Structure formats: structure tokens, C-alpha cells
Length: 304
Image (cartoon, rainbow, N blue to C red; front, top):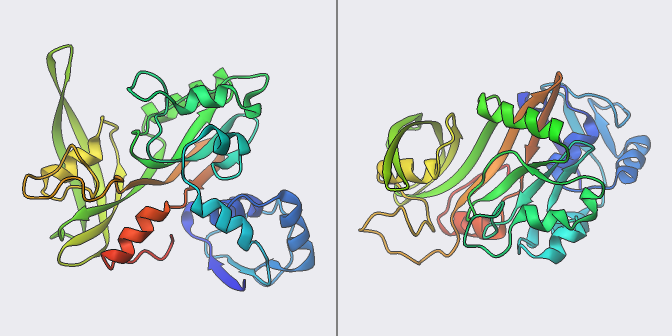
């Protein structure tokens, strides 16, 4: 593989080894160190150490770096089973002393309280990753939505992350494939969404920024950045403007056919936050079925 990349603003001040894992996948630290020493990975045509922090518009070049098996293994397996989670290869984006970041597969619940027999938190309780500690859920991600999800390893980190989510200091980016062609290239979705709690109707404000990445006469690929965090917010808001997400069996127009797509085409693509002046950015590869529909609908997204 010979490729070059320009560092975007979201990765500013990030360690080069962390950037490589976010961009490529789970690479052994020893392989990163060796490749940097040998010059197979260079920054602005210079050799650097793994701890070096990259900046916006830096040019990263990768020469003859053989990691095809790693990428293939990471991309093709999205079945949420105990075996995959315990292997720690397909699911884990980052694993440090305070939290782990996973690429959650669609079809698995985050925690108990749903109709699902298995959930991510219970499975990780039995994992070696949490020996001497326990997993803390700090935010939500729908069962049918894939992508970036964070689990804290201790109470202090859980409190910090929970607070960041509550104060809207965690910046989330989703990708969705929707029915129809949106009129605007970008804008805001502002709604008053309602739900029922013990028979009582509750109305909540919901706000999301959107940007159309590609579209044609029958489909659109949309980038979504929710500001609020309401239940099923993105699904409801896109349904409200007449552009239901492919695979959504609940929020779908009566004029569209249910059941044609088994998977919900909503993916938590990226998440960004800062803890103690340290910037964190995590990106999750999209599952195979998502890419397949993009190809079928002739939609393009270069960063997949």
C-alpha cells in the first residue's frame, strides 16, 4: 500500500499512532513503531516517533505497509457474538486505562432493559478487558444503529464522560442513507418530538445539523450532527421531512415498502471530545451492508 493523507482539523494535536489506528484499524503498536523507524510511514517527508502529535494539513505518507489482513479482518465481521467481543480484534477501536471505544454492531443492545437477551455491557463484564474493574455505560446508541460507542472503565471517568454528554460537549457525527432527494444541501432540523412515559405524553425539543454528502433522484447520503439527544431523534426527524432512513421499520412513510432492507442504514461514524486538554477523535468503519447499499444506490463517500 502506498497512500498519502492530509490531516484534517478534527485530528489536530493527535498522536500519530492514535491517528493510524483511527484511520486504518487495530494495528499492533510494535508494527507502528517499526514502520516509523524504517520510514514506511513519514510525516511531511520526515521520520517521526509514535508519540509525535500531528497538526492540521500535515501530510502523512505510507509506503509498502502490509496490513491487508488486518483491514480485511476488521471490515468483514460485524456479527455481535460473545466470541467476537472476547477476541477484541473486530470490535475495539481504542482500549486505554480509563475507557474503551468500540464499533458496535447493529442488532445488539447497549445494556439491559430491552427485549434483547444479550447486551454489550453484560458481555463486557465477562471480558478480560475489565478485569479488576467494571464497564460503565455513559451514553446511548440504538440497538439497530452501528458505530462508535464508549464504555468507561471506572467511576471517575464515567462521571466525566456522562457530564460531557449532558453538557453537549461530545460532538457526534452520523451517516444515514435516506429515501428520496433532499432539496437543501445543508441546514438545521428543528422539531418538537413527543414520546410517552407511563401513559403521559412528553414533548421535547430536538435539533440536528445536516449536510448532504451525495444524492440522486431516489436516495441521499446524509451527514448528521445532533445537538440534542432525544430517543430515536435522527430517525424521527428524517421521517418528519419525508426522507425515512433505509431499513427503518418504525419511522417510514406509508408510500414506501417495509422490509426491503433488513438493516437500519444509520451509522455512528465519528465522535470527538476533550478530557483534561487532551483531544480525542474516534472513527468507526461502516459495515459491509452499508457500503453495499451505497453502491446499489450509486452514492459516493470517499472516507469509508
